[in-house]
Image 1 (cartoon, one colour):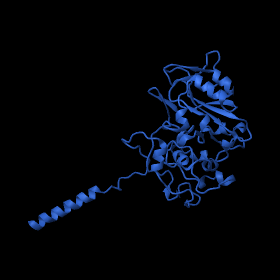
Image 2: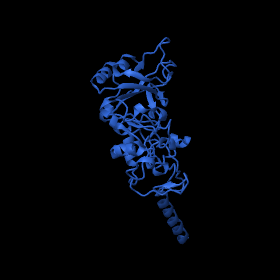
Image 3: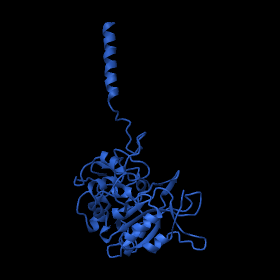
Image 4: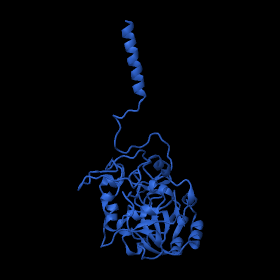
Length: 324
């Protein structure tokens, strides 16, 4: 009896030790929300998902899009998943430029660099309570910089969006019907894009950013990322548009689920490739709630996609401040 009891005791102790170990049999390869982790800046979440350098050799099955890259399967889950929408900047110039009043914006535009305004609809912006939530990839305001690299491909292929174009401000407005089902369209983002902040490929944009900004925007580790990590530095020309030269997005990335992520790297419209756009942080602005709307009336309704709007002063004069 003593031997049997000691045998049971030893097994019980072994079971306790085994139960202390993290289980690996039930780990899923898909991205999962962190529950109940609090919302943290995406920069922090990305830093916690450390990975190999972009100089690490990539491995891909020849002739197949189902291969592996840097030892990770296509659509592999990130080590930590950020929220299903982009967190609002908590520090830096973008945080300081949140929710400007109409008077503050008008002054910032007067004192800002020259350029006309181009207006487009950010269809992925929703209203949660009384706050905007950007569940799409672009405009992407993670890492302290606003970028437009994974949406509005045809718009970005316009010649005047390239380096041979003209100084430009790009305004993102909400779809109609967000607030009380009214047809009002509200200002969500506004950024000045200097000629030197326009790039011909994802690789060039990646190389222009600081390492922490790259991590915050990486589609490989963020479902709302708009940048794709090149597998080696210095990609140019056709090599910079070859999908196999980039790390694929994680499986919870919207463009991975839709099967459209390759278009973010290589697509052409009327013989032109989309430009990758980066806003100047000192002249980039975001709104977290409905405050400034376009002054549209039934007799003067703008097109669904307003497009070129005129000078920055003219744009400011067509905004109305709402007190909510």
